[in-house]
Length: 203
Image 1 (cartoon, rainbow, N blue to C red):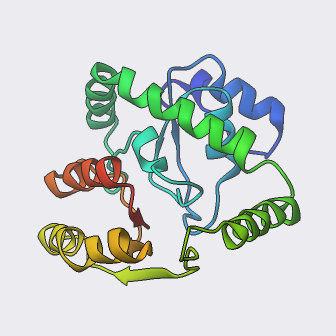
Image 2: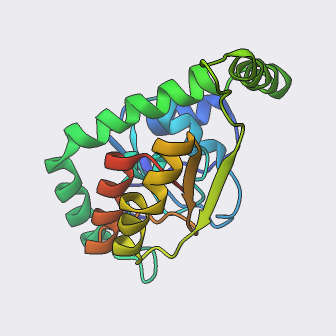
């Protein structure tokens, strides 16, 4: 094996994960079961190491901005090391999103589901009780299915009837897209910028 002292087999224990993540700036997580939440990935965020990870990341908004992708098929160690070097040149942005992920996982999602549901219900009750002279805030949400490549169409919605929904009627709307990708293609870069600018996209 290459660098055997830096290869760890996941046994699910905190001790193994601490050894694998605590002393490293980057850690590559090889996750074959990529359709469920990965415990090693969650713990890598806790140890503030940037994960090279191509698995399931649908655990919070903008999660894919805080991870570093790599080509797993066919895997190439020299190619992966070259990718890490490129990621290292933009480490500040990765760590910025790492702090956001830590906030989400440690503070926002660490409470039992029932408590979080109660909090949302109380918010709705307050909105329902809140009144404006002659009007009451509508409890309406508009979900819009969209394809990833339809950047222009989403912008047209924001500038036309979506704007009317928001400004004239006070309705919220959100675009629902398919699975997020950690890739670095031009479309993925544009997608990340769109998410950051508008905050109205859910994967």
